[in-house]
Image 1 (cartoon, rainbow, N blue to C red):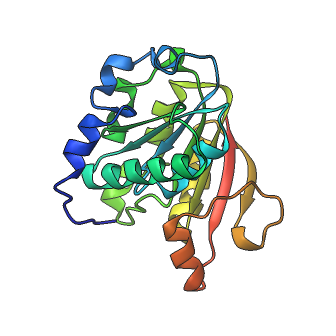
Image 2: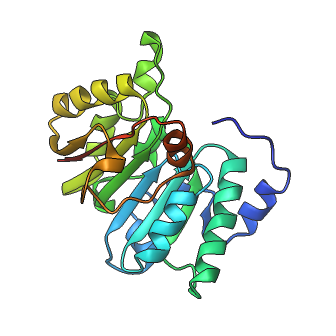
Length: 218
């Protein structure tokens, strides 16, 4: 998703207590940063924060890291997180957001961080053949995630794109993941998971586009 430049975003992020500007310094040390032994979940490409803000505020016993590459997106995510926690009358104590290139994610996470879950929501499908290695579910990326995922960790993935979804099923299998659940119509799937609808998801739903989703474990 393209988004207009937000001149306020960088300053607000730098002043935020839950924004990390130097994530490489925390490789292997994220548990210490959170200050507890709660499981750590990761969202790749958090966008405007609609998903992660709700997820984190509803689950105080889970720690969350949300990553995006665009300051404007992260600025909006910061504000959304602040809004959700204020509504819940909670301190922001179980989430950090950071700006980073996900293709280089192994520079900021390792096995000691023991990530228990990854969420990937409506990532860029990169439909052209020469660009497919950029997909967040491509085999090349999945092999990187395996370097910091805990044993038994899960990846939750959803998309509107049929080609990306079908290819991703093969990517997960090629990388040794087990597909635990799969659906081609998330809205009409009972008890698939406790779903939080994203901005994209609501838009696609209004257009009659079915959402595809899967859970894979390693």
